[in-house]
Image: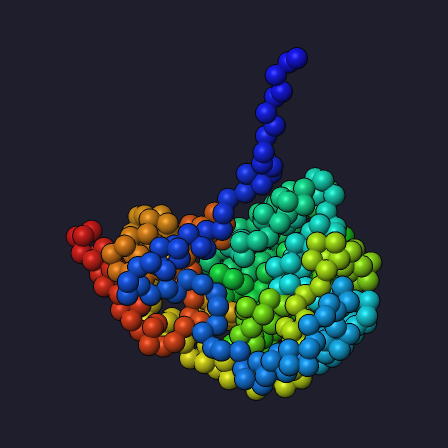
Amino acid sequence: MSENKKKQVLSEKCLGIQPSGIRKFFDIVSEMKDAISLGVGEPDFDTPWHIRDEGIYSLEKGRTFYTSNSGLKELREEIARYMKRTQGIDYDPIREVFITVGGSEAIDLMFRAMINEGDEVLLPQPSYVSYLPCTVLADGVPVVIDLKEEKEFRLTAAELEEKITDRSKILVLPFPNNPTGSIMTREDLEEIARVCIEHDLYVLSDEIYGELTYGSTHVSIASLPGMRERTIVVNGFSKAYAMTGWRLGYACGPEEIIAQMVKIHQFAIMCAPTTSQYAAVEALRNGDEDVAMMREAYNQRRRFVVFKLREMGLPCFEPRGAFYVFPCIREFGMTSEEFATRLLKEEKVAIVPGTAFGDSGEGFLRISYAYSLDNLRKALGRLSRFVDRLREAEG
């Protein structure tokens, strides 16, 4: 009898995907005394009490059952009302709104529901780390569009058209943007919408930071003529309501796409956490003042961080959304990873190399200002000291 050949244990597709570049430094930070992290995109606010109370009350009432696969009807109705009052878009809460385990699950589900092998997904970068691996896992082909600092990291119609081929199917629209803090205005989106309609592109509009814009109001591309029927809006409760650990997101879009996303979710997840869903109903009904308070606090921190970075001579595009800044460190002649690694070792400050968000992030760093002003002052003081040392060493 011939000897059995040993089978390969792991998927080649999975092995080819690199781990998230965001987490690399924070395993070290957790064991480093007196280290300060400005890297994780997590609000430092507690979930507002009235939202927590609703979650607690749901447990006290024994509401520990499965919900429908699509989520609580009550929550989907609140989301539909929210989309109507903030963006003027009408969604059927039963057929066009669906609850997911965080916005990240919705991203994954859209790709798996829509992509056939070889379909191209247009990915503006720098951007959130999940888009590219989720594309690959769904057998799609990622096509990167490098965003430019001189254009405030906005996507232009010309940049989009340059990358479109006969296989192009989905455009990821990651605005307000993580990591740059860039936004897209209505005028910007109108040009992008024109190209999408002309080339029959669908859009994944990731609007998780939509409530966190400064000096302007967020506009969803789904609200523009001809775009509702070709856009999946992804959003959630983590950032605006400080509900990261509750793991709750949602998707709104055309019934035919949502139905297939729900089907995958049905077999893989069943339903989003029930306690979180009851809390989210309260967040949407009575959380506007909480969001406004947190947004104002972030705005104060944003202005402070940009001022301090410019004071130490680091060029920094002024972010208009989310809670990140993306300063340039090219003058020092080292990679983003080298800079971040040395800063962590020498000054015990953790930030994320720009390359964690795509190759076009080389020469930049992502700093989160979702932290207290006291921690920001300490960390930026250490960064300033580090930058001064580098310049002195250069002569």
